[in-house]
Length: 379
Image (tube, rainbow, N blue to C red; front, side):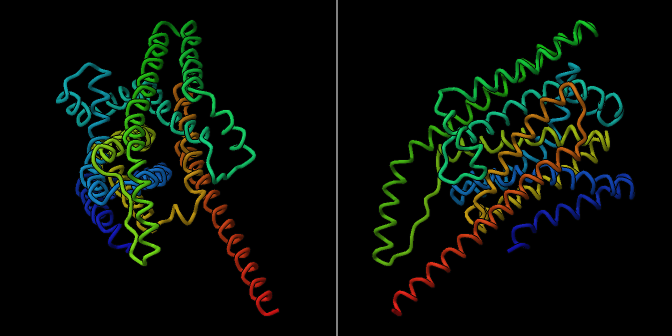
């Protein structure tokens, strides 16, 4: 099962590391290995959230996610995206931007760093909306009940998550406005850039997420009918038929997954510049990491891990919220990528352990109930 799921990731790892050795020797080998670990640690929460969405899709769209989706993730976000950033920010043509990335790496890194506020604002707002919509929804299963119960009540207020996101964005943008008086007009331009990029991230979330939700809602009646058929089949001893999204609903879910992956990859791409400014090594390292994230997503779906460990999805969304805040903070301040990665790992690890404890408690309760039933029957 592990080899079948992670086989392509192992193959890409081997090819990527060999290519790194031929490209820049053992130093390049070490850099690519570090970048791979960085991407996996920063994107583990991405895999958990992706799995929650992917399990709703049918086998065809799951294959699309693994084929076309991985091309978008690896080549689009980890290779093309940094070049596009430079092309837009420096007003260069695509070929000129590629040439700059290969021949003048310091200047290339400088241009990407200049574009960071816009990237952080867009990605931060997109991820913040995901987090807020999650915690404001009333769920049957609650992880941190003392926090999630009052938030679920607040969530009944219409458009609350949008209002909070806009307030956060205004605070982030005016931070640059305050610095403009001290450092000149460049920061004023950055404040406007942050505001526009943040609004773009919010709009993107509302369009893609809204379309996904719309088509998913349209299938609810059909799912209810299929559920009734499942119950009937169960009574008659026939196998149950799985309900999975297809057609337009699956397409927009796929689109949502890709935008989500893009938002998650922002911190990895930016963080990679702390290790190297060589675009080839960056693409190799982050590409290998992206492959493992995709394989891990499929593994979680096929093993039913999210159903067994019910708090994992909660932990992943709290990690998303932390990442959103970190991205917005990095508009003004630098934060070490190790801290970013550790926060996500700690939150998901905590939610996993909470799930294990819950499962043990339920098993113990069932065992006690079974013992009482046997004693009663004996009497």
